[in-house]
Image 1: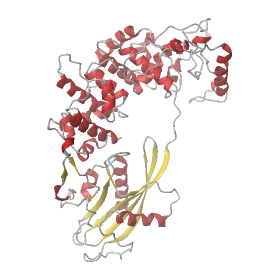
Image 2 (image 1 turned 90 degrees about the horizontal axis):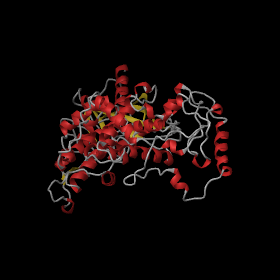
Image 3 (image 1 turned 45 degrees about the horizontal axis):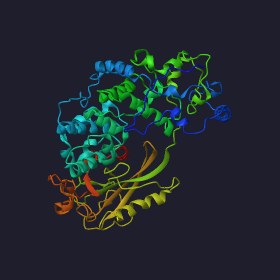
Amino acid sequence: MAKRRRVVGSSSEAESNGYEPARTKRVQRKPRTAKTAKPKLTKRTAAADNASDDDGTNIATADQRPHAVTLHEIAEPEAIRVALLAWYDQVHTTRGMPWRKPYNPDFGPEERAQRAYEVWVSEIMLQQTQVATVIPYYNKWMKKFPTIRDLAASDIETVNGLWKGLGYYSRAARLLSGAQKVVKDLRGRLPDNAKDMEAKIPGIGRYSAGAICSIAYNQCVPVLDGNVHRLLSRVLALHAPPKVKQTLDILWNAATAMVEGTHRPGDINQAMIELGSTVCKVREPACETCPIRPWCQAYAVSRGSTKADEVPDIEELCALCEPLPVPEGNPGLVNAFPMKADRKKAREELDIVNVIEWRSSINDDGRWFLLVRRPETGLLAGLHEFPTKPDVPADISAAETAQIPQALLSSLLKKPPLPLKPRKSNTKTPAEDPLRIVQIKSAGDVLHVFSHIRKTYRVQWVVLEGGAKCPELLPFCVPSESGVAKVPRGRTKKPKQQDVDSDSDAVQITEKLEARWLPLTEVAKANIGTGVLKVWNKANELWQSV
């Protein structure tokens, strides 16, 4: 097989930890001989004998595709850029993204920092979320928090309220904490370079830093999200484990080559993302309309246009790529790039969720429900949920499940209720009687899938009676008359003097509530996640059936 045309060029020496061309590495060590190279190929081939691809094709008939390492380098970045930008200039407004604006070289530092804030918000929202879903959330967010100082002055309750329904709530918490750090430590401006952006702002990694700084500050730094990963894997015909360091180094190096020394790095990065999202899609890529098809090695492989008699020298052979699932020349072969990652099976967990209701003894319409706020870090950070016993054994008995509400309420109420004692039908507990659990009824199971966990919420309805007012919660929270909990005496913690920035824009941090009673009509409006809303709907189904 002849050496293929090089598609990727020079590597970055500034910001990137990218892949260095293999030829440079080889002069620093003893050359490999054919004797040492063959076992690698033999081992990989032997391992493939019993394997199958995702479509059930036996990989024993796969194309071993010996090729030079230079196949995975961008050799003509300028030609690709020209074609890419010509296409992008025609389509960049098609999907109506309000955050997508042309770079303005006349902007001063304050205006560029404002653009950085806008891009930052959009990039965080777009993580794991489709553009059409993000647009209304972005518009609502920017109306509420037009500047980073407005966001920094807010709190997790307000932020989560705006984020409700968007999922992956830890992103909202990171935006808030990042904004507060920027106002407190950086005088209200996001850093103007990717290195400082990644180092100083919580929740910003290499991709986000590259996107923000290339778009808002015109810095020549690369991006590598899922769309660009797929696009460049196909351009380079890179069929290697997608998450290993060597693969990522090659792709970051290629992304760097695409923006290095250009006048429009932000547009190039956005163009690659747009092309990957709309043309070079996971399934059924529109190769015939792709502006960079002439440089796409995956397309060439799928058309069988790369075979020749000459085989690369053993010292130039790529040792990273795995065999292709089918021989070259198969029209559907483009879909084989990038190589599919082994999916880690999501762990199974069972939670006992208690929809705890207190009924007034003097008001027939007084149905109140207890919500608990989750910690501000971790899964579903800062959101409210029903009191829950997480990750219980799958074989937990009904008797053990019925004991859980008593234990949970003992940690939430000043005066825990008396144990379960079912009341007689059509009778009401007198207001002067002590608080007691009068009913525990199973509502069934709800399945909710996170990216790494399959949660089964086992829902039970717990009814409390006794007393004329909502049972008093522990000192850190109290219910208001309207059902919206308030911090006792309106306490607010002011930052210590040494933490106050000299520009007098320090952020006040309001003490957060841990639990609250809400009336029936307010529960669905609270800052609850999708899974908790499923639980609430499950409880409503139970009530309609009794």
